[in-house]
Length: 470
Image (cartoon, rainbow, N blue to C red; front, side, top):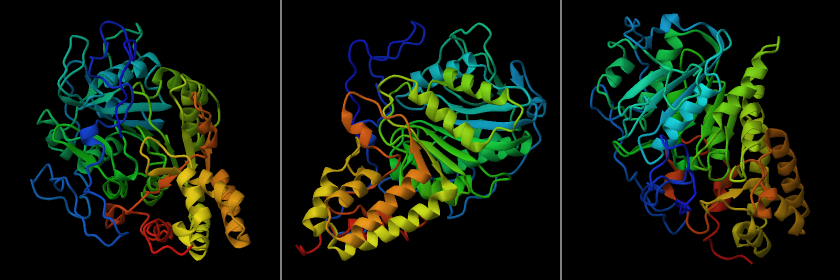
């Protein structure tokens, strides 16, 4: 992925929060971080590969992370100091939105701005919504309350709508796993153990019926999310699945204020972790990301009603808020994970029909594959657009029927309203992309623990370089 060159007027803010000249205009990864995986093999899945970054270390022991993440130890909340709040003083709520705000990278300026937006939007709603953020800063520190150290924060309303951060730091018990991590001043937000420890601590020490996790940072689809420049780490999908699984309470909604996260593979991961909905963008997000002031205004209206707020309503509030934003907000979709098994069943049938018809060595199928809508990461292809192109071009009745059934199932599983941008191609997007390389399949795609390993789509993409049959 590439960082787009900012124009002279791009991403300007108030003087106290204006991004530096190096601040990106999108949440695309810098070129040096765009793909942390090994070079792609040239012949399907045959070439072995290992991760280019070292295995993450257990922050408490220094040992390599095990296959199963340990359950963090609960702790007794410490007595709060000035401008802090004890977890026991956070009121019980119907929903908790947990923001994993990893700004320890070139998005740091946007991190502070988004905290300001959360405060301007009202922050937490007593008895209804708790907004809690694990904030990891980078190199910046200013008089308005942004800090280079890492903090767990209870987001509250700023009555003056100022540039200052007025939310309270949550007093974390220093004997807890999260407390030991925070005591170092700098956390590794690219570690699944940090994410898990924070969620576990919040769930054990505050009370809520439902949870949404907002993964705020760079995103790279099935390759990873939450890229921390210190110590140059990120969370891949098997790690994310482990971090979100087996917590005291389930995560209802996995959302990503990050690029390229509305993919079949990420959806598979979120479902495997027990979530009900996935919210994300097929394409790049602008550096400004979500408009949290607008989003919290919409959530306030939801909680003003008498009926309980559902996971679907929370998810669609994000989608509708994003759709109301600027033209850079090209895509945002909501995927109902309760319907994902049906989608994957149709995807398997479609994949089997593709392979039977010659796979990607069939001329008609290859043309549809090559011409389908692709994202800033050209290996990510809109699944529905590809299926429609196959249906419209093939003379194989069985393949056409399988393609049509997949399109129909996709429409029931995911919705996409934010089709914007000057380029009319975005009207073709259907809500989820899938890994679709033009060449060899990256061996990392079959990493142990990946939720999509049994998908029949794997049989399709490895035919790109197969012996030609037509």
